[in-house]
Structure formats: structure tokens, C-alpha cells
Amino acid sequence: MTLSANDAASPLRARLVVWRAQVARLARGELGRLLSPLSGFWLYFLAGMPVLIALGHVIFSRHCSLERDTTVVAVMMHVYFLRMAMFFACLGVFTRLFRGEMAGRTLHYLFLAPLRREVLVVGKYVGGVLGVAILFDMGFTATFLLLQLHHGADGWAYVFHGRGLPALGAYLLTLTLACVGYGAIFLVLGLLLRNPAIPGLFLLILEIFSGVLPSWMQHLTVIFYLKPLLPVSLPEEGPGALFSVVVEPVAGWLAVTGLLVFAGCLVAFSCWRARRLEINYSTD
Image 1 (tube, helix red, strand yellow):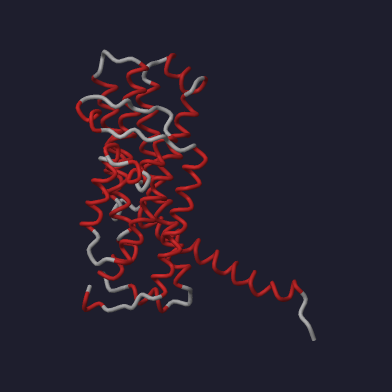
Image 2 (cartoon, one colour; image 1 turned 90 degrees about the vertical axis):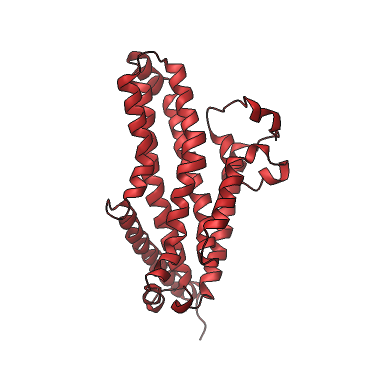
């Protein structure tokens, strides 16, 4: 008796349905933890601080123009969101997806549950990406709208009838991809290292000073693939421009594809590592 192709494929489809449901449940749990004001208050602070700065600028600034505030938005994205806040948010969230469970001596409960470790890795990673991306996208959107719309009719025309909404969409895409890339890196570090702080500091230095690195090293940074997606680029000025190394940027579609493939490879490696992870709380 031979099985038809549909009969042979049905067990695989059933497993895929179960895995998808498990990933969704794990992601919802991680998302709820990150969005909780009690456990995720520091994320709210990082994502919301620019909103307070923008609000103070709107209230107290009397000599600003729409063009200048558009530049202010770009500076905040380049300097604060991408190189500082998003980096530290992903460092804190993704290194603790498994390292935090080890420190709390709860990881063995997850490993004893009837689910594959690959599903556990993907579910926690997806939840982390969704949680961090939602908070930072909301924070940047509020900052962007505050700085643009307080210019009255000119601001409304720019946002809703000009280049404002496409620029906002590009900024939000860049923030989300930053979370995907940084999150995958720190997921691996959290699974490999007991204390990922020193490698994290080294990566932070690379990302902040990526403009002065040799061409081949710039291609190894996340920020190199994010800059082509930003609608407003910042000119190199001041003494730092003397040490900058100009590198031809990659096309936007290639930057997006490259980051997604890079993150996918790191998540796949994390799944492989989780399969071989042995719990020994006495050393953690």
C-alpha cells in the first residue's frame, strides 16, 4: 500500500501548524512582558525621552523653521535612535532572552515543555523584535509629528500632502530593521557568552565610529546598511570629517535584503546553539 503525496505531506502540515501556534504564543508572552510598564519601564524611558525633548522644543522654542526641525528629526534618528537607544534596548532585551532565564533558574522549565528548541528561539526572538520595534516606532512617530505639525499649515502640508509621510515610513522601516539586526546579534551573544557586556561595548564603538573605519569594516556594521534607507542624510562636518572614509552606499533593496538574510543566519545559528545548550546553573 502506497501513500499519496497529500497523505505524506499532511503530518508535515500538522507540525507546521503546531509550530506556528507555539511561536505565536511565545511571541505574545514576550511581547506582553516587554510592553508591561513594570518590567519594560526602561524601554519606555529610552523610546519616550525624545518625545519629551520635542515637546519642550515646541513649547519654548520661538525661532525655528520647518526645514530646521526636519534636520533635527534626522539628527535624532542618526545619533540617538540608531546609534544609542536602539542599540542599548536590543542589548538589554535580546541578551536576556535566554541569559535572563538562566539567571532566574527558569530555563529548564522551557526546555522541559513539549516544544522544539528552535521554536523557542524563534518565538522569543519574534516577541523581542515586536516589543522593541513597537515602542520605538511609537516614540519616533510622536517625536516626528510634534516637531513637524507645530509649524501650523506649513507643517500639515508637509506631513500629509508632501514628503512627510513617505519620510516617516522610511524612518520607521529603518528603526524596525535596526531592531531585527541588532536583536539577532545580541541573541547570539546571549546564548554564547555568560557576560556579553564587553563584546557589546566593542560593537557599540564600531557602530558609533563606523564612518572612520576602513571600507571592509564598515560593511560589517549594521549602521552601514541602515543609512541608505534614511530619507535625510547628514553631511560630514567638523574635525571628524577629516578622518571619514567615504564608501559607496548599497542600494536600498540590497540593504533590506542583506539585513534580513544576515539576521536569518544568526537566528538559525542561535537555533543550532540552543539545541546543544546544556543547563548548568552552578556556572551561571
